[in-house]
Image 1 (tube, one colour):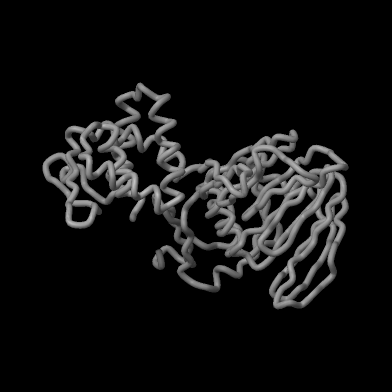
Image 2: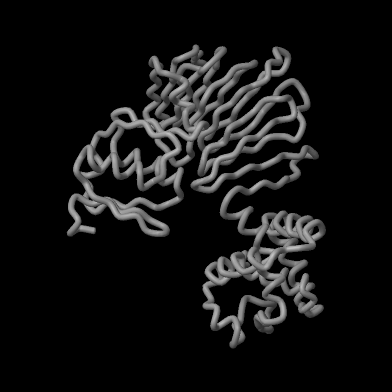
Length: 349
């Protein structure tokens, strides 16, 4: 069952336009999909505490809704449109009577789905919080023990609402900067797809996207222990200790581990709105820009990906960054609403 159909049914419910059969179907959808159940609970909380929505907010949200469900505004106003429904029944959108409710509900849904999602799940009688940032979104999280986490764009983390037992454990997919509160009796452990980081109290940056070929950890203060995951049952060194202004790089596929000197402040510069590229391939720069600005990057020629560039930017727009980078190597680019195209000449755009 699609999320769009679920939202449409929910909006009919809050507008009082849903039939008994549709309400039953909405309940069945939640039983079969934990994600939809969590979304339903969030919507219920929002609806209970947000009685007033401005006309401007409704109009803006409605425009996004129309795009999301792939209907034009003229179709919504004058026609009926079938959506997924219980077997043997069609649900038609009576938007004239409940479009305002739909838009108001989507104010919170769009925030959750397009910017930053936050919800709780239950596992083994222990509550876990889940934070997920979309591309172009960053956030700061304060944990129950006083530790702070800066979560980068296109990243997600899971952590308990309260730390119990003898350890403090979280799971990360993406990039985050940690300032861990000291507690020698409770080690702080970060689980990654390809390894584990263990500390007592320190500050450090981790870059470990599940779809990336390597893991990077750099230390600002204290000492960090990195424990690589075993690939293909091939055991490598158990623990590597990293000291301040050192960065560890681990390539799981080959088992290669390297530790080198770095400026740890530069590695966490993204938490301050800075982007620092040091002799980086344009393809890798494009990946960072895609995460930070939420626009898909396309190259017209593969050779452009190998350009090596250096630059430091502080709270600059994508247009400003690309202007200066393009002057360095002489390529051209075009930025649209959802994408950026890089080419060797204007004729190729």
